[in-house]
Image (tube, rainbow, N blue to C red; front, side):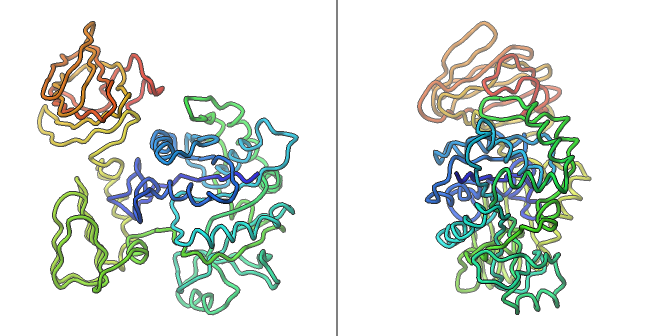
Length: 474
């Protein structure tokens, strides 16, 4: 059985301010109407694959589950990493999860895919996967090498050995080269970009990993053995997984094993690792501009201009990126886009919350948008999904006013439970136990006005919660 393993880690800092710590690029519709995670799951359709195993950050769990629900793609497991430990341990726990309950059965083949890659030609991708199946069944560890289109210095390379294919023995892994060596690599048909996608048997991978990193396998086994099931999620035992060494599949296994092979892949691949890469992978106008949203340009060429809400107007720009969100604006020359990660690091040192969250924040029950704030007040717009409810909670330092804009709300305030319709409102005093629910079949929109001495999201005491969040603010 072919089991897709979707690696949904990473922060995507080079695509700030769209990509943020709690909403990184894999959860964004950067190149189409669906998010990159959704596109990754969809591209295995037609391969006869089983339900995917998704490995993700614990803080992203509800986003992953909701995005899979929206495309009707239930996961075999959503494994939550309490801390990031790179790809080798992530795939190890996925391999162990794939083998659970089937110790004596046929070995599942794991198709390991990062959730934040772009592939324009799904048919070519699926053909490459089929081409690698026989090698994987024979015990080889298959990686997919992208046929390079330019002398890229931001990618690692793989040199394939002589052979007839479709799976070639790997002769050499090349670290990210300088421009001169990258040009030489592209000039040779033997060099391929290292895509970070893999195909191998679950037991085979664990056996090789145990040869080179036995402690890693032991820690992953302990982390999964001590895991707890929380709704749709598998929570790894935090102490065991935190003890696990951090390493990539390439360093931990592929560069050491004698059984690594590479299948060439020519499918319009990109890891969308920068704004310039995104610009290169989207349709441009006659002047080379890629625009999104409310954008007006004059005498502007070869730019990427993104508006989420407000008008973005540009005059006389060449080779620039301009990105507007509700709470931040980025302006950067295209040849400096790799330095956006340094800017994000500086913002973190300054304690700026814009590195972690958008102004509109997803929650398992819906979302809230912080519309305005000032001394002792904050205004939010709540969107509650049909049938969803917020936790039964209390605040020590703030009172709240709720105004229903559309839909119907069922409100709990201490011992009272009542309905509010459009244009009706209520007041929640400081210290009152309260909850808002959407009993209807359409989204509920509420304006919430908070007032008090402290308005932080950590001023929440939860008494009941449908999503297992007692004691947390997420």
